[in-house]
Image 1 (cartoon, rainbow, N blue to C red):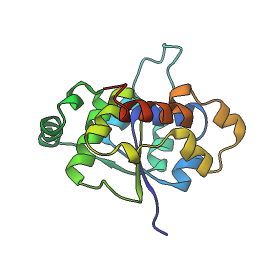
Image 2 (tube, rainbow, N blue to C red):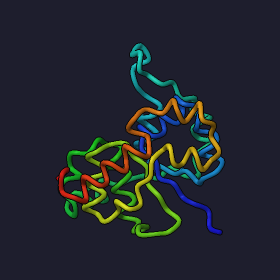
Image 3 (cartoon, rainbow, N blue to C red):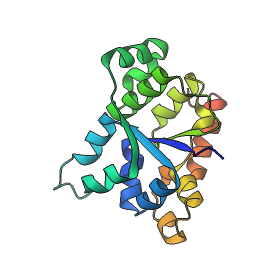
Length: 173
């Protein structure tokens, strides 16, 4: 069976570290991201009480790949899906790389984000069915109930399912 490739944005990576799911997920799946998400993951204000310190070696060890993104790829994404212009940089770069690589649709690739705007953009790109929750990935990777229960709402399967349904019904445009 082919290895599942998971493309993760900054918020998902940070939440995986916060809840101590990263090692299980990155061992079970081939986790990839883009350079911008790595940069965002490793920066931030350490004095912010919400700051999550991610050890660079732990992040690098868990990543199967980190991809560079060109301005041309960013421009092509926004030209195809103008709604992507308002995405946070990490999500925009991730979607630009995926768009340029033409990897989706695929039965061995999933993308994980906890951002409503990114989910709406994924629908416009025809990728909504390839979006998965951090909770689903963690469960499949054998993460325990205590860690799963610690996940923030937007990283849970029921939240993602609700947002996907609202997008498909046009409730969230």
